[in-house]
Image (cartoon, rainbow, N blue to C red; front, top):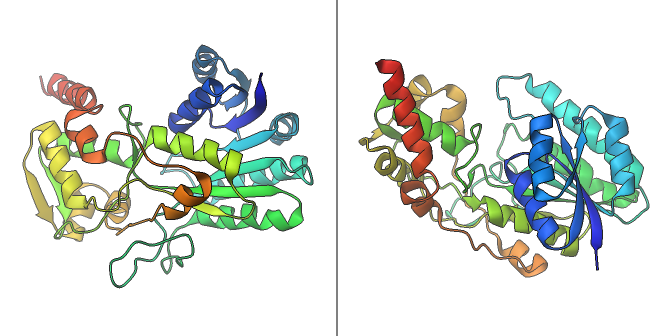
Length: 320
């Protein structure tokens, strides 16, 4: 028996393709938003129905959301050089269009948020979904999350999954932070970490992320947020050492200022956050548990090995 149809924005993206794959495997039909024909082909190959458009096509978003029984919103502009305020406003307008089309229907809407904005606890313990934000943190997705979760009071069954900044696996994605760090290690011939590297990263395998979104659709509660993290004991030094092993370069501690100079101020800032996000709520309320290969193993000897080899080969070709 066919299960309820889903509409997924960002369906042809890194996480979206895995969510689509798993949803179809569970028996759901999926309509997936894609900005390009190339993305649409990927969706067709999985058995999904592609819908061409982007998050500014509000009529498309409203139509497809109204036709589906559940909506997962993953689309986001990951061009970090773009106007950030415009990115945020475009996303908020898209979600408002979706919410308007499903008001008072009881249809679940699950959006992607982030867990990196949580203020670290003074004692170093794990943070949870009630932990306040860091002061002056650029938490645009938390703003959107607040808007969506508040719609529970307005007839929309909205909730959020807070993703780690380091979602990994299946070779990663080119605009992801781990991919950036591997590329920097190849370029610089060294893998860097800031100060003593004791801050944590709370990584999450992409397949576990996909399962979490699907469990939120099935078991999530309106107005709630759920942390998506698998490990809270991996440090930035651990990550740098795994990248060093992967690329075959030495590992070195640097100051924040040197990291900002060698990488970029933005990447240095992202790589200087202590993130220990508890997944207890997701485990207990959504019956979810991480199952993917651990972060360090996947970097040093897993799906990133061919990625690093390709980067090194491209660098060698340029230098010839």
